[in-house]
Length: 89
Image (cartoon, rainbow, N blue to C red; front, side):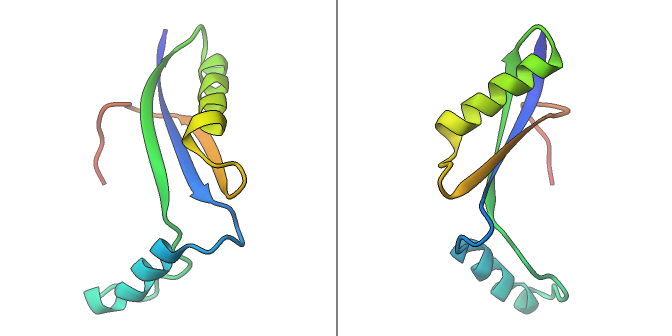
């Protein structure tokens, strides 16, 4: 079976996030007030072939830890998504 998976990678707490800080500082000028604690990250969408959902998540987690993130400064999580090929904000 094929499972749509989303891997999210974010900086660990305590690690400086200059991209998130820059976005947060720019928000009031764009009319967005009351937004704080902005943290930037990465999202990877993929389809994983596996026998079941748990195996797909296990494979995605291993992939995230070994390739998609730097485990010294980043946290990674995997979840089953609705579509690995699309989506919009």
